[in-house]
Image (cartoon, rainbow over all chains, first blue to last red; front, side, top):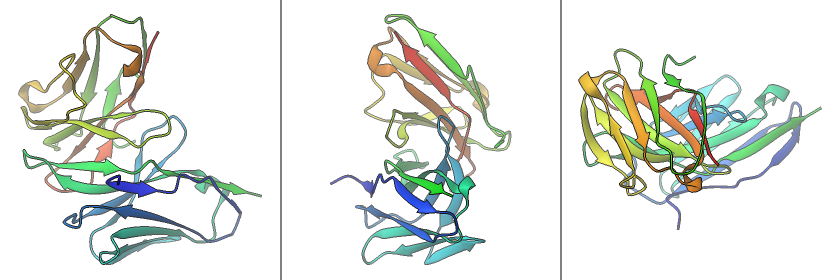
Length: 113
Length: 112
């Protein structure tokens, strides 16, 4: 089993729709989680952090379910500009005390007119 | 713009050549990470620095790879005797303590 798993999609949704992505993780000791947005051939950009039960920022809501070991990202009223790949990342502690991220493969979202 | 810069942005090289990439972190960030991303995959951790000390290296980092962070500021990642399988985007990320990591624009390497 992969450490972090995501449905690669693509999710094709009409503008204005609500869409949700899930991400499962295998290490039950993981403490913090992140959603990154990545546009084609660009670097990942931090979208949201999920430290406890969840987080909300405008149209975006992230939730954590520790019992089932997954995090979710909900996008409401989707815009054409939301089209991107959404990467889930799980924080793990390095042997040197840093916090290396383990990423899923990403979920591709295409918002259409 | 996160404030993390990388140079060059693109590098095309022939198999067997050596290449070096540079990352300049956000100035107050003492932790620096290198990741590699191939098409259709998420970034994979390569190595981590706290200040000038390299504290962890992934098994992905073969003997042909070496990274440095002299004086705890910028970092370099060198690949010796490049192979076609080294073609990827090399990403640098930085943070303070356990805060979120911010990525630079990456260096896209193509090995012919």
